[in-house]
Amino acid sequence: MNFTIAPKWKPYLEEEFEKEYFKQLKEFVDREYEEHICYPKKEQIFEAFNACSLEDTKVVIIGQDPYHEENQANGLCFSVNDGVQHPKSLRNIFDELTMDLKVKYPVSGNLSPWAKQGVLLLNATLTVRAKEEGSHQKKGWEQFTNTVIDVLSEEKDNLVFLLWGGFARKKGARIDTDKHKIFTSGHPSPASASRGYWFGNRHFSKTNTYLKSKGIPEIDWSIS
Image (cartoon, rainbow, N blue to C red; front, side, top):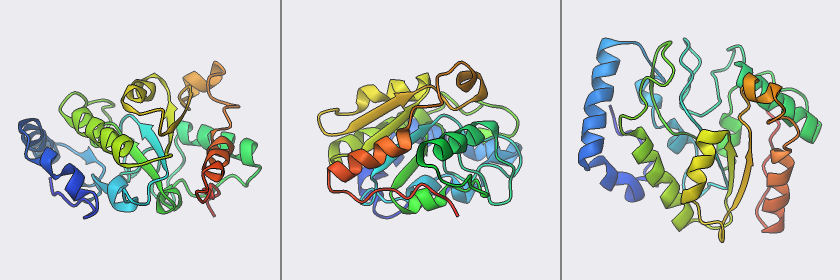
């Protein structure tokens, strides 16, 4: 595993790379990529950090695992490569977006335009074995991304955290709610959405309303 993480994140995370748990995690990930097909590509493991610096972060969306089907994962949670069919969870995200903000349903499922505006698209687990959902959980990634959330909570002010589903909501305990705003809802997965736990949360407009109230530039959620 190469530590191709953005320089502005390094001062806050480089100590993690030297801890024993992370050394064991690195050995596990290197072995997995040698012996199996894994996603995302090795050079995209830290893409969430490379695409959105700590300095620029305004919004944090927390996912669980990368997509585990071929050519989907690109290192940003819920995002897929250009030209790839939208997974069902992403379709539900875009359906809520179009209903909330009355924007056109995006053609591309690549969420890098959000990241460029300060949306950190962070999976709790940054790698996965092909076709095996959850296969890299409980190997150390969760401890690493917990540290990331701690850094965000401590170093930043007036962030918006969008916590979708029970797994993401558990991370909310690490966030200083005196400094930051948290919006929660069900997960955008079909199972959750079909039970009425996703649609109508209006998180996109609520996020912009909060950012505007703090004098922070809003996010253009539309993806051309």
